[in-house]
Length: 116
Length: 115
Image 1: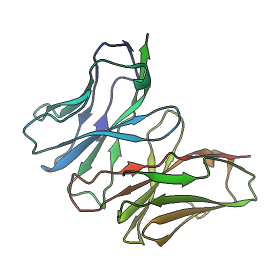
Image 2 (image 1 turned 135 degrees about the vertical axis):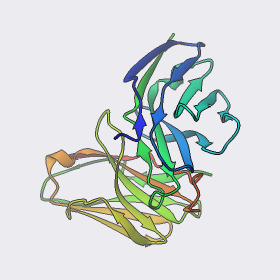
Image 3 (image 1 turned 90 degrees about the vertical axis):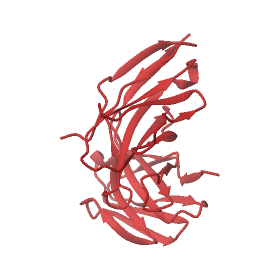
Image 4 (image 1 turned 30 degrees about the horizontal axis):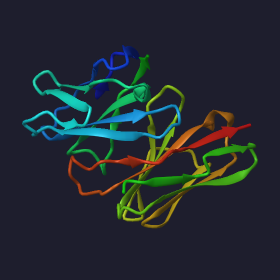
């Protein structure tokens, strides 16, 4: 079974609008961390935001927030006020406490296109 | 400073060539990773070094040979590659605190083309 599922291969949003990128995960480990990365066409994977399984509040980093719904095993990324520079591939990833040496499980990614 | 550097940015090599990819970090991280990424796919883990020792080898063919000369440097030696090895090769590092908060920071990658 896939540990991370991103069901949206592509998303389109107009500049200045908000967009939500979906991510669901599958784990039986009670302790885990969830990460979102952005990958522009240049290739670099840029860390955006982190949410721990025991965190009570949703994580926020500037225009990025993580809508964490533990019971539904979902960790959606919300980007507010989209900018043209947000156009990129976005990957959701998970690290379980029981995983070996920082192994990250990645989803297939969502290609976000922001149009003017 | 969360910078991981990789050289070269682009590499074109023939199937008989020997080349090396280099990765460097100065964040005091004790774990370093090599990933391979094909277009429109997620990164695939190849190797993990922990405290300069190889701790994970994801059944990678022997034509890829990793090396960790010190805690800041990670190399990937390439020999007798195949065209299907053409991909983006990403290096990453992390604190290796053993906590779920341990974040991997990636370099810009090397785009490899094997002719």
